[in-house]
Amino acid sequence: MRKSIPKNLRKIESDIDKMRIRQKDSNALKVKEAVFDDATLKGLYHLSNDGVIEALGGSISTGKEANVFLAEGKDFDLAIKIYRISTSTFRAMEDYILGDPRFKSIRHKKKDVVFAWTRKEFRNLLRAEEVGIRVPKPITTHRNILVMQFIGEDEKAFPPLKDIRIEKEDAKEIFDTIVKYLDLLYNEANLVHGDLSEYNILINPSNLEPYIIDMGQAVTLEHPGAEVFLKRDLKNLTRYFKKYGIETSDEELYKMLKAKNELKDQK
Image (tube, rainbow, N blue to C red; front, side, top):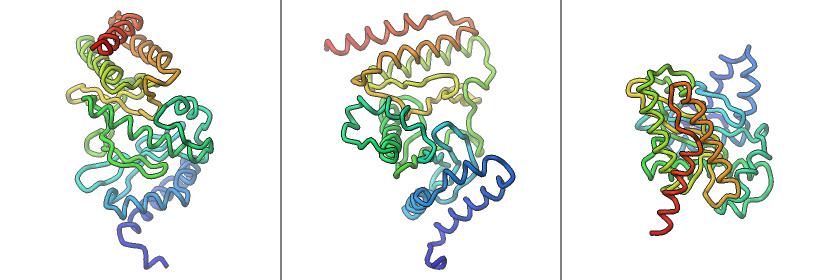
């Protein structure tokens, strides 16, 4: 039976086995085993067979809901985000999905919610990219697997905002760019990020351009929690940049975004 597995699929399986071997003496092994269950392996085989993934690399990050791995694509490096069905916080996901008109018909089973969440992040990234926001370019999605363009250089991911040292004048430029992105997200893409902080804004060290990541929880403006989530995002942003002497308040930014939104509705 093994001989019938195509060469590219055997390569993916071999890559996963190597990761397991390298991590065999660490707690990460348990996480890897939870990530690469049979259904997820089949999903990776499917993506490999379609020519999306050519080789799977090491871990980029491990979050509460998902693991992200580096992978080799046909034309550029990829980030493979795998949501863990067995350990995802189902209730927390439901809070962001219920009320989103795009997902009215999903069943309230854990697997279905995780699959919907994966599709939701893909669609949110598409919307953000379409209006000119720097985000990981979404490539495709399959079950609990999201494939995006890798944000980094030489197989090293760009650092999050929280880990990079910047000068005050550079901080103001980064802050203004992020505010512009939130404006585009709210007033052009009709989305609210919902979990924005210095942890999910990546910075290109060479030019200090920010990238917004982790868009799975982003909601449409019709969502009953959209305004609360927006205010929280703005509070996180202004809190972080206050240490660089930027005194713009979250209330000011909220009024600005709302005024633009109301003006758009009047046209």
